[in-house]
Image (cartoon, rainbow, N blue to C red):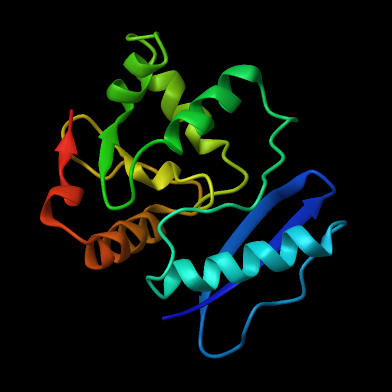
Length: 159
């Protein structure tokens, strides 16, 4: 699968990521104030899609988001590669057990999907749920991670 992306960054890190599928076009020109962050994100994304990277180390600047959304996105980064958790599970971990819908809304505002892995959060009934890049991308990302996960235990679901 060829993946094309656009990355925006500033001196604090990646601020936005957009993806699309394509046939051998390579990444389109990126918009960035920080060439280092953009280049690092591009390399880490290539490694991720090739199954060589399970987490990202490139900095992300989400300071423009609400404090709650920032907390939700940071919490999502704690979900291990190849695993999924429910919106309710994430809300409970944030100390807001009745805020599953608010968690979903916060995840929908993720400007840096994949790097901040909101795709690992699914509905409580096991349904895939929505995703910032569309449900088709969410399904592909979960399948990619499942394929490259080292153990069967890493594809478990915890409600």
